[in-house]
Length: 177
Ligand SMILES: [Zn+2]
Ligand SMILES: [Zn+2]
Image (cartoon, rainbow, N blue to C red; front, side, top):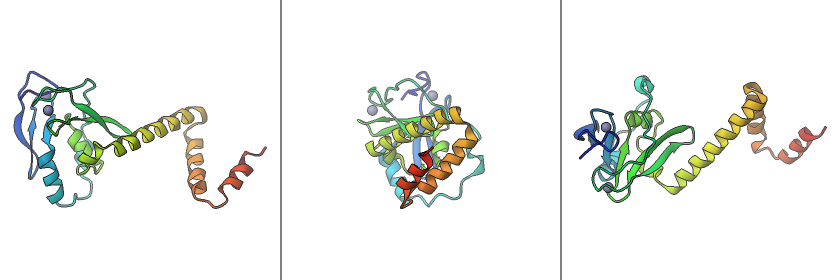
């Protein structure tokens, strides 16, 4: 099998974790993971320990172009990990194989998402990611307008008001000149 990202290098059997086999590319450090084995590993693996400090040392890569599955040559689909990260995982829905760019496994671990892979590929997860992204860019827009300090204060007020029984009245009061 050829690496879907480098194309010219061969994938070799490797191990992401104890009990989790994959096919890795030595050139780009990407890895192809069979979800069949992954699910089995995720069920049996011990609970992850507190976050390793060395994990974020190298930023994860992200291949912008669409990749073709090394097994069946069909186009793989991209799934964004979270609303605050641009990294996307590639999935071949025919083969049930996921492609992780170099560093993305470490990123999943750092975000405590290393057991959440099938969930990331769900419509519900992707909807939440889109909401998070929209909220993130809205926040950035308002930060440019009002400054980080003001937005931080506004966030505090927002959190305080969120479930306040007199939320409407208080908003009305604040908005009144
Ligand atoms: Zn590669
Ligand atoms: Zn495939």
